[in-house]
Length: 298
Image (cartoon, rainbow, N blue to C red; front, side, top):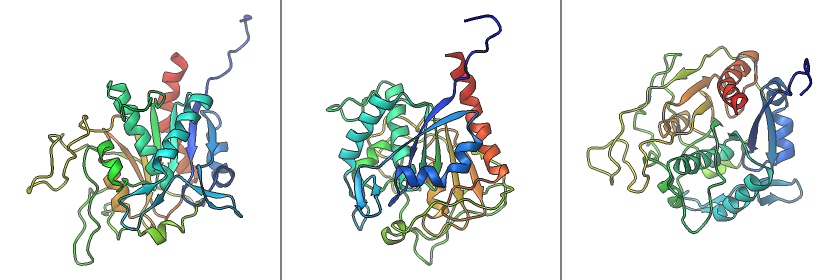
């Protein structure tokens, strides 16, 4: 390289996974402020989900959930599709997922963690391509599909009854993040928007003490799965959710964060959306900047 010529700045490559009934073009448009505000640290790659929901609108999904949420129809095809995306468009440093896309991102995080620890998810398939360094999960929750429980350290919480009181960690705003669980019908209504300014700051959670990987015990409040070989999902993560989200319960977003080792959590005042005020963008920038330093050393 010639003397005095500055080397091109290396950016993080981030795969963006849209929500249910969206597509890559719509998600790119709805995250324009996010993308442009972070253009100095990241390059965003958008892909369409493989399952068409409404052909006239071009909307798609990563799977279709059964009414009880125990089966995600199309999951195997989605995994094959993403394997092709990682092999042909990768590598990716990280992923961003919104709602259903955030659920999918959490599964990718889990498979990546298993790969890093020399465990192979589904020995019949080659999943070594799933290697990421971080994830940003917006309005994400733990998959309730039976086939996915081997990818989480603990089982998902049961839907709360109207008479039960929710229990969750207290955040900086001093309020607990419990609310009613979303239904499949509500989930199909989701949209992504931008928001007015938000003043909350991120808070790193202290993860619960590791528990033995065993079947549910009568005294356990967060029953572990009998399959996951790690105490926690090790992929660094930033979990973002709204206190007034009517589609995905804040308590479910928080519960997903507990599946991760040392998760960072950011709670905003709004609903089912990706906040993009100046303060919000700074949170995302600070999170990504840590991995940009590592990227520059490669």
